[in-house]
Length: 430
Image (cartoon, rainbow, N blue to C red):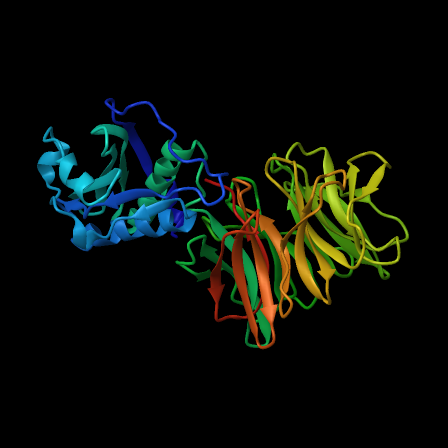
């Protein structure tokens, strides 16, 4: 996804005749009925003709990922959508109901050169009513981003929940002798390399506005934490002092970066303002403290410490000495705080392999998300809606990234084919 174009993409207007949102789907109902939905070929008045099929494909791919919709194949559509359907001519809803569609999406693209107007509408085919409609202005290269945004509108209409289509996931992967930072769309497309310095670049973390990535790089021979602006490519050092060091998380307001630094073999957790200034120690002592993650209200952190004899997950209030251990044993690492603040995901050893768990911030109500007898599941990161985790999946001779619903019922491979993939981090919505 072209970050440089995002600021130019504008949603112009919600069509005035759009009806109030009606909730059809309970996203928390296990095994619930999928809603039959048809996405018609787009009308391209002016612009790349390929958008007629490409934009419906993006919409269908996004909606299929939710496992909430039954997509009606295009080959069965009985009505051809034309320009007149955007200027007063009603759809033949009877024909859409005949092929089993309870909802219909149509779209139109028109404009000149590098400026196009995208119009999309969502209809309730059973009632013949307009549920949502939007116009966007952007370039032809923004077509997929536009489709992602309307897919989020569709999901909101039918579930009341915000979608995550168009978000991205940063991660590290081996490239020759070193490791580079990559970013990929949450649909597994538009993979791109962020660093390219043939050194070790590790632990990418998103700023809350999604415009910055922090990461550790060894490109100067010593580990340094950098901030990179993904829109401009500008980069600067944030933390150089100390031995091994890694960023953990930004504060929710984006003003602070929490990180760990090792000095003389002892690692503590600090924070520093992203604009510069003196570092503050947040958690430390004789143990090794690493991997901080910040609660959504910014008042607490979860982190890893071996002060009890093995790595475990602890929670503490920033500025307080009080700490609570929440993991139950084994070897627990990589905590991630949910966007709602009610769960902490982490990796822990189970049955000789690493598995994913979640617990309440007080350590109660521990649940297994995924555990495999022949693979390691590690490094969880929450989606911005809190419904999914992305994690690294490793087995003999293989590594990949997977996305799994928080209840463990739905899972898919996000990306594979690169070496030693790890440290995935899910961006926020922009």
